[in-house]
Image (cartoon, rainbow, N blue to C red; front, top):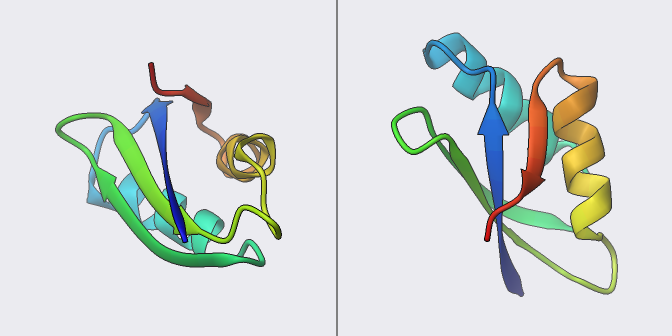
Length: 71
């Protein structure tokens, strides 16, 4: 498993955190998701042979939030 960090903007409440978590959890190859409202980041443990960082950001954006790889 690999850990990927993604900056997420547009979250304002725990409902947003749940939406982002659900969107990422639904992606094939994702093992564990931790989303922090305070830091505005999502930490995703996943199998890099099954899922890419681009696919994860697409899932977040499809849920209505902005996403980019964390520096």
